Length: 213
Image 1: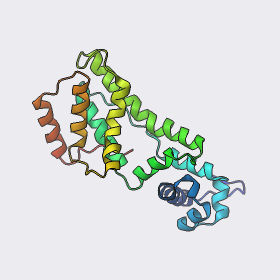
Image 2: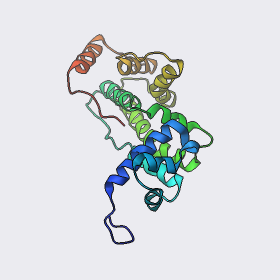
Image 3: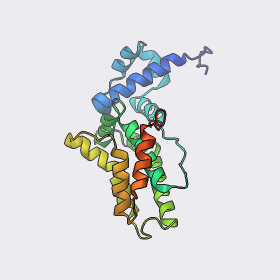
């Protein structure tokens, strides 16, 4: 990329600034994030930062864009396994440093509404669409109730994590599997012992983890 002066833009500055901005946004919230402090941590000047992102909202938008969820909907012909995989991917993503704090930032009234909307559209909505599509496939195949309340189920899937985190309760190693089984049964499905055993064995194998958000 070339700037207005005709010089090549230093991509390393972009990476350092975005990384620092993500940390500050998580630690201090949108209102408390200082562009001067971000520039200092990134080892660049305020002028260099302002040339790239003239306003704090521009920088926060760029941070959210870096986090955009572009994962592909899984379809292993086994919706229950797909549900477990999706929740495991969510678990690994939200467990990343600063990610849970960032969720709190997005709930603050002082966070610019356009930033919150972008976060919902690029980070939250894709996950919910994949979860819904997985459960809709389960309905089509007669695996869960035809009148299952998917809206409540979607909230149960990820809300179970946030509830435990707020309560200070430790997250069990098999959280994804247990949550998927609870939701599945609540929707009228049956979870057979063999499915649980297969899922447990799969998690024990190296290199099977899902990518983080």
